[in-house]
Length: 245
Image 1 (cartoon, one colour):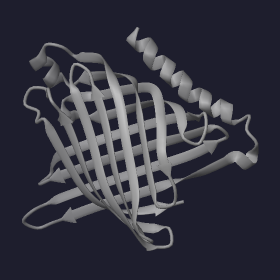
Image 2 (cartoon, rainbow, N blue to C red; image 1 turned 60 degrees about the vertical axis):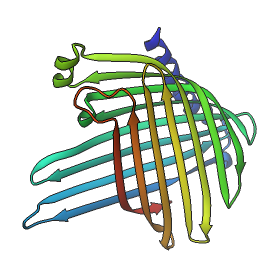
Image 3 (cartoon, rainbow, N blue to C red; image 1 turned 180 degrees about the horizontal axis):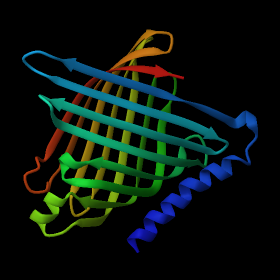
Image 4 (cartoon, helix red, strand yellow; image 1 turned 90 degrees about the horizontal axis):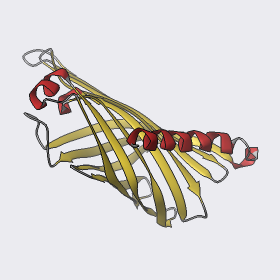
């Protein structure tokens, strides 16, 4: 039953693309953000890190779709200390300007959190409380599904190579302009099931010139029942260049 739920979500997402093909060309818009940041030190301490993200937003008639690809890689003294890759998509079918139903799915690789990969999917209802040139607030809620495939080391310690759970998926996304050239964004993603998974991202973006900006972000990931030898909380602080198109 749980795999069927994930398949249904993927069908919902793919249908948004086909539905959009029936819309008139004037209703189609495509835009997004591309960001990248890197550090490199040599000498007594050798460190390197790369953070990259591509966030595309595609409007097709009554559909508002979003596609995200991101990655983080870090080495300290020739030892890999962080390696995370993720790809995801969400389709929103808008009943009107404020109300919609959504479906999303993602694939994530993060061995430092104890799993080879994680697959998530969710479907539900969303509402925009306000959306203007100065501020934006939306919330989403609905049933979700999480499938974790553990690393060989974690599978040996836990006695199981995989785990799957149905969850209650919820999102709160808030944005506000700080000035004509800067904005603040706070996003919470909560998955509540046998475990509590929370992801918080706080960021400030300041325009440098035209479509180029600097972005400072702090991402916190929390799990109330972490795997053996894994900490409950991960934090990630980045400073990246952001290009909007």
